[in-house]
Structures are given as structure tokens and as C-alpha cells.
Amino acid sequence: MYVGIDLGSRNVKMAVKEDGEIRFLLFDTVSFYREYGKLVAGELVVDFSALGLNSIEKIVSTGYGRQAVKIKGGIDLPEIRAHALGAVYQTGLMDFTLLDLGGQDSKVVLVRKGKVVDFLTNDKCAASTGRYLENMAAVLKISLEELGNFYEDPVELSSTCAIFGETELLGKVVEGYPLERLAAGVNYTIYKRIAPMLKKLFSPQVVFTGGVAYSRALRKIIEKELGVEVVIPREPQFNGALGCLRYGGGI
Image (cartoon, rainbow, N blue to C red; front, side):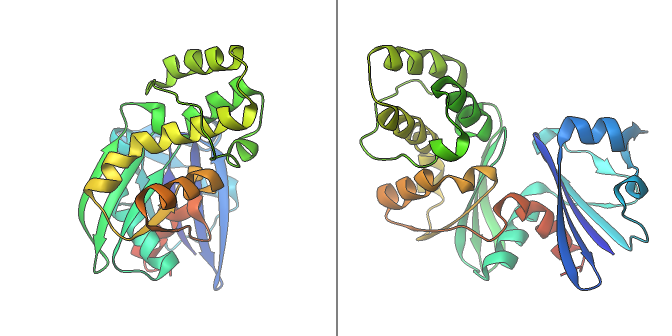
């Protein structure tokens, strides 16, 4: 058994290779630490047996930005490399720009010949992350899935702050704008935050990963505004975990 683990800010993602098959496990991060892990001497001790994972041959893990912590008994892999390896494995592409939008951070990675040559990250502001979309969907009283359907005729939202953005959106609701335009405006706000990074590390093909990659609207906006092909791998949310599995020789 080989295990790849991505210790994200909102979720812990696992890719487990056993008997030639890969299966995926997803946990809320806080619940995972409370129920299955504890920090001992600066390392995370995980009760893998409680997860039904026994006879593990190799564990490779990556973590969230500056909050990364090494799992005891495992190999620690930098998150940029893990996500790049996962994207190469899932798409078969060797030259592309990787866009990873997670729960609380965003990453843009330039990959050439399968190797990382440059990257930009933003983990100081939630305005281009899943947390921002969750907050805005709550204001609009719709699901994340529904929010991801709208991209045409967006309302102009000028605030790039996740907190002040809610206040501005509420103001637009009071002004009577329809839901479709409000939701499109929210999605365009995400694009405006990530566009400078995508333009600086430009490629005609963008591999889009992370939980936000399930947003159909954001994919359409990026393709329209930048004139690129957006490729969403089969398992965008587990891309980092798959990269760890790849590094460990499990796939």
C-alpha cells in the first residue's frame, strides 16, 4: 500500500494505491486532526489503523503553505512540486501553467518539460479561494454548484477583499440586480485576482486544479479572457495527493 496525503487548509485529501487500484479519501481538516492525528515533537502522528490503512509501504505528504507539517514515518514533499507532479500525471502534459485554487490559497505554477520553472502564490488573502466563494454563495443563498453556473453579464464588483466584498455584494442585492448577474460578478472577481499571475506565467494551456476547479463559470471566464485552453483533470481536488503518490512510486 502506498499513500499520498495533501494536508489542505480546509480538507485533508488522500490517494491510496492498493492491489493496483487507487481510491480517494476526503476529510475535514479540523476533524481529521482531532480524530486521527496529534503533533509530537514537531511531527504529525497519524492513526492510520483507525482509517483502515494497514501494511503501508510508503507515505508521502504535502501541506498547505507555511502551515505544512511533516507526517511521522513519511516523506515530506513541497506543495508546489506535489501539485506539478499530480498535474503531469493526470493530464500527460509537459508544458503548461498550473492554476490551483484551494480553500484558502491560490497557486500559479509554470511547468516546462514536466518541471517547475517558476511559481507565484497568494496565501495572505482569501479573495481568490474557495472560502471566498463559500461566503458569497451564502450571501446569495445559493449552493456553490449553482454559483459556478453564471458568468455572463456580470455586475461590477470593485472590492478585492473577501470581507468587504460581502458588504458590496449585499449593496448590489439591495439595488435589485438579478441573481444571475450577481453570481457572475462574484466569479469575475475571482478571475480579476488571479489574472495577473496567469498573465505573468502564461501558457496556452492552463491546468486547473483544486476544489474551485469544479466551477464551470470560472473555466469559461479564463478561456474567454485569456484565449487559452483550460484543462481540468479527472480528480482536481486530489491533484496534490496524486502528486505525492507519484513521487513515492505508487503510480
